Length: 459
Image (cartoon, rainbow, N blue to C red):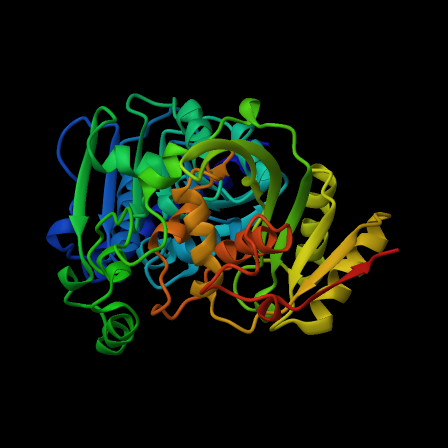
């Protein structure tokens, strides 16, 4: 037994010597000004930077230096670290295996999948566990993932379950003499990000940088990013790290949405509910949005006199948009219909054709669900379809029941000259048409021919 312990100690000592030899012989990493950690006893460091600015590189280096520094805990594991990214795969690739990840700064660190999850281990005994923020299950894994002395929050603004994951991260950040977090993210106009950027959360140091602050970015990457974003509002976000709340060309504004937002407890009885699906032809996200319809009384002026009239209102109940295999998104759409007792699923088939319908039908059959599928095919542009729904918002007849950050981002930043498809927005708009919240005969908008549709039944 004594011999075994001696061998283990000798091996650990050898690994430490090898690790320090590497640090001596390998070229030193020279940080750019925005990659230098701030001084002081701060609780959080928010590195708010554009694409290619080197924010992941800076945080990976910070983790390495933390592991090499004074131990936060006595015993064989001097540091317990949490690494959280939009998905578990993102944490593994960007934060560890990528060109700016830990494997570059800590070549002695090894990532392994063990019982209980995926961890990164250093020869000195330090351990980092990786987590995603994409599902309720990810949030639960973080909740039960143990306490940490340091958390690295990669692409914080892209976390799907941002608020829930943020809370669980903070609750578990309580190990060692100074628990703290670092965050590397391109900004998005989400409530938490805006609070952090505005200094509304105590003891958080903010560092800003643009793509142009990194002279080491390869020219071909810089050119590709400029080709995609230069001269656009979204480019101010992606390249210059500005928080863009809305685009002046978009069909919605934040105040327009907020003014008519409802709490779920204030939702009136619905006469119809549909799940809108935008399959995107198998690329990108599959938009899945649940919309309800109710009739509300309004006063109209007829011949100079006010008279009551019943007008349709639309209510956005859920955004189940995903990026899954056909079986995965088909089941997700059907589950949304089950959860909200929808009358039908409204599926756009411009790109997916019969495949999209068959995907939903197969998922419903496998789940034992019988629900009509409303098939819609557009012959007019996305803006033309979305404009009347935007008009409903201006009239106070389109309501977000709760908050849907990513959907609302698309509503307030997309316009028809951009080269990306607003899958969530498309999925939201279709039920407004086929439920007749928007009338197909409205002058200057999509005609009934432009919304050629036919009902099919699964089962």
